[in-house]
Length: 129
Image (cartoon, rainbow, N blue to C red; front, side, top):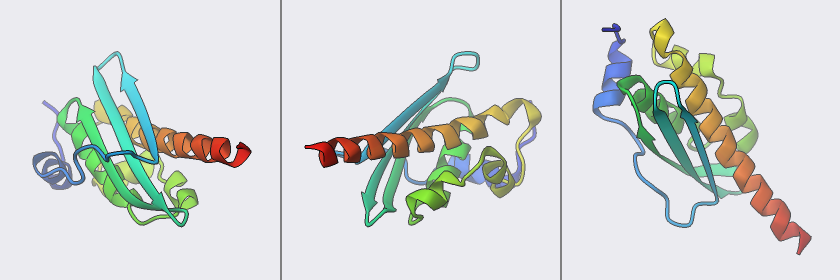
């Protein structure tokens, strides 16, 4: 069994921002068919900032901890700042992930980016009307 940092365990046992946002401004879903992890991120945007970030994750402890950490890191950031959240930054914030679980940090960053992309697409459509 992989050894997890205390911070990973803390975010796994007490994940932050779990749930769905009603009428989100953007959603992003990613999955890894190999390990079976699925993550969906929901965002609310106000004045180009992530006012709220929530997630639902089906997966291992590392996937849940990553989702929790990404949501914490992203909340309150501008869209551009949130885009700079990389898998390595997430893993560093969690004080490391076992090598075979590092892909979970990729999923978290991807799901957040997809939610932001989804929001920007909706904004572009609104602007074209």
